[in-house]
Each structure stands twice: as structure tokens, then as C-alpha cells.
Length: 358
Image (cartoon, rainbow, N blue to C red; front, side):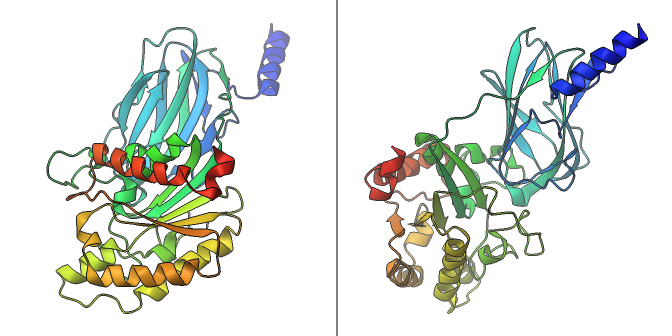
């Protein structure tokens, strides 16, 4: 019997994607090769990677009637969409609070598909993912490959992050449960092109100044939304198209604090885009403008924007610009995110640089 048990365990280890069971359940650690990670994670501990950025996804196929998601080390607020087969649950994992929505039962004995997507933004919180628990002796598999046609990266502020898009009439920031990056205009645009996408955006962030300390040029290429963070490996995932939508916070913050519009805004924006170009020499870069009423009606920002577009598009055929017609009075709600995405998708379909992705 002992020899037989050793043989069985050896087969399981050779097969990969399976961990030795405990009583009633077994733990599949986050390091198991069957997990697919999509996004910019902190993998310094492969057994407990940190989920940081909005729209980051973790997926795996598993069998059995039950599932439990395992987290620890939560910082501030973290909200996820947990899609098991065709049913989606909001998962809440906040600092110094018991996680909510992490346990699933009555799934049936067959094979299931899990996609865990971070809906709340990186600057609102991060959390360690430790894997899953499933039924004793149940199996896991790598998910079927996703047929992405291209890769898109969005660098922006609250408009792009999906802030407040599930709020009622008034923007609120007490809970990020209603801030859904998976229904931002960035996510909707990406879905329209069957694109893998990264959303590297921070609410309140500007080029020179804003409502948060970090500036776009300090964090767009980092693992965490901090100037002190380690730089991400940008060669591990390179976008085909990069969208930059910034400037509203520079205008809003200085206006509401009775300060002059930053004199070095244009130079800072150009430096950021040229850094992106150096990192992604083959990508097409799209400079986005608008989406909210306030920024679109700023004389100072409009003047700077025109200068930025002229300088960047001159001599670089792989830089374009697009201005949204629709302007939300508050942060765009989901219905308005769809309007913005529809405008952008329609324009993209007409562009020569997108022809190979249709």
C-alpha cells in the first residue's frame, strides 16, 4: 500500500497543476503552472504574487463542487469580479477585514472555468493572491489559450481607470466597489478588438501636478503606482497600441487651487511620450483628449495640447491623436464609458495602423 501511494503521488507531481490534498479539500498554490496571469503583477514571491493593477486577470480551469479563493496581506481596498463559468460575483478583500465573496459551492462535479479580474484601481489597494482550494482529488488544468488579436495599453487617470462608473448621480470615493475598471472605456475598447490590455492609470494623477503625489512620468513603467517602485520588465509584454489620456488633473488642480497652469506641462507630456516610444519602438501611440467636460473647456490645456500633438506627430508617423466628442459632466458612468468606447472604436477601425488587426 505504501509503495502504491508513493507511485500515485509521483504521477500527480509529474502531471503538474495538482497539489497533494488535505482533508476534504486541496490547495492549489498561486505558483501552480496551470494559473494564467494577465497584467502587471509583483512576482517577487511566486507563491503569493501581489495583484496590483485594475483589469489584471487570473484564470484557471478546475473541477468539483466547491471553490475558495485565497488571499492575504491586503492593503486598503480591493474588489474583484470572480467569474465562474457564466456567473459573476463581486469579491471584496480589504485591509483588516474578513474577505467577502471568496467561497463558492454547488458548482457541480464537472469542469469549471475561473476568471478573477481586479476591478478596483491600483492606487486604491493591492493584495496577495495565494491560490485556490477545491475538492479533495479534484483536478485543475491550464485554461484554453485566449485568441487575442493584439495588445493594448492605456495610460491615464480616473477617466481611464473606470472611477465612479457604477455610482449613482454623485461621484463617491469612500468605497471602490462601484469603481469598475472592467467596464471602463479602455476595457470596452479592448474587448471590441479582442485585445489583451493593460490599464496603467491612477485617479488624480497628472503630468506635472494633480491630486496624488505620483506623476505619470514617474510610474507608467513601474510595478506599483509609486515613484519608488521597481521598474517592470517591459520586454515581457509589449503593446501594439498605447493610448495616453492625461492633462485634466493638471488643469483642475491648478484651477481649483488658484495656481497658474504648469508652464512645463508641454515639455513633461512630450518627455513621457518619448519615454514610451523608447520602451516600445514598434508600438503605435495614440494621444487621447477629452471624456470629461471640465478639461475640454480649458483654454490653457487646449493650447498646450495642440502644441504637444504638433511636436510629437512631426517626425513620428506612428503617433496619432483622437479627441472624444462626448463629454461627461461627472466621471463617466458605464453607459458613458460605452459611448466613449464606441467613438474610439469607430475611429480606430478607420485607421491604417489598425488594418492588420481587423
